[in-house]
Image (cartoon, rainbow, N blue to C red; front, side, top):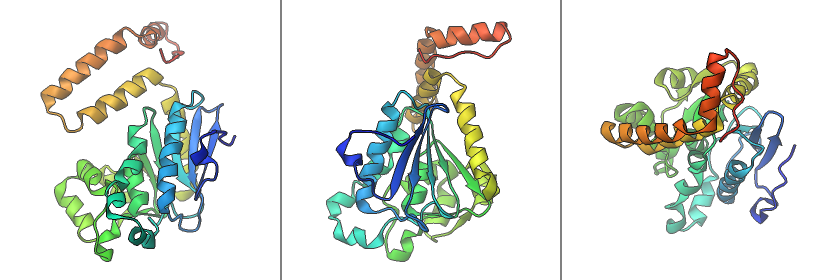
Length: 266
């Protein structure tokens, strides 16, 4: 089912569409400017709003970011950066961080070229699934630039300083298999298995308590740059709050009754 949001910024979508499947409790944002799915400057703000709308939609438990055609995205519209002011481009990461800010789990299903902002918005998601033909890159050095939408910072958090320098400073392409081995993606599958792998991960996440999922995501995001001691303290507060939830009580009952829990998110 197509999204029916009344937000005026989503009335004429630029290079993507939004679909909601209430039965599977998922909302999809689908890049739809094949064959390369280039992301234009104005599209970034619309993508942010789309993520915010799906995050607020009670029908949606999991958000999926995917693309039409053989490539996820070759990156941004290059000439558009010359038209934008320095002040504007200094805040490009704000929109691309929308998946990270979502309370709900977000999956990126990547195939083919996943370059530049395409890679950066995927890195802002919680889970990435690649295919054997996926190629990741932050190629901005070839333009006399650096990644500007959070890519280098997020990548360094995943693979460390030395490997990030290798990728960013050499504009190096990473295969889907390499991304899996480095921990960038959770799975690397044949291209004809990407849909099935994404569907399976959605179904797995939907089965958990939505309250516990939201809590876990926020805890992990907030603890990313915290000390171990601070992270443990935050974890304790979150654990204490969930201890009082109906979902936790239902989970305990279901465990002892040897049945699947029926979580309600409260």
